[in-house]
Image 1 (tube, rainbow, N blue to C red):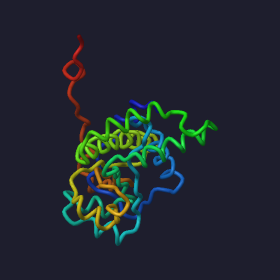
Image 2: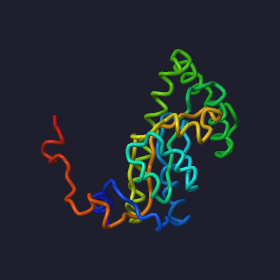
Image 3: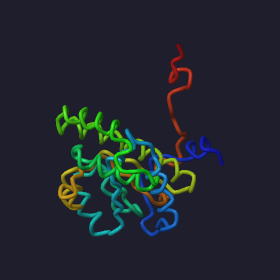
Image 4: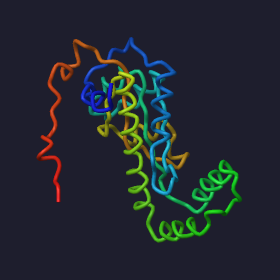
Length: 210
């Protein structure tokens, strides 16, 4: 199927079958799609935490808008962004880039000096606003890849960031949760949205041409 057909197939599942699990092979394909997503300056200023443990999922349910969806999904992907930029983080990323490309470290120094200066003039709050936005690109890639594999998904912002961050120890990692992606297979009887037509704003209204 084409990407468009896959996207027409998918919807935000409202009830999962807890007995059906996503295979490790398929999960890794979805994670690879997220890893390959573009990011500003190639810094990849976020991480994806995979939660499969049922006890941990249930602890994270506190404050969630759709706790049953979180509980019954096969996996919960947590997209968590850097809480701030630093010269050390930037150097670490670009040292890795040059090592992989077999280039001398510092090869991109003129560019990294510019972004260090730019972020150095910003607050940690501004940093997180920027890093958090990067996660949504990867989230979109993961959604599309899941649809290609015919794995159901539900992107979510309706959850307690404090509950997720605390249970996953994200503060100690310099990360803050931004969004979640529930993965699994729909419960055909309970997923009330699956029988409904997919609705989006008409193309002629959605696209504005100048």
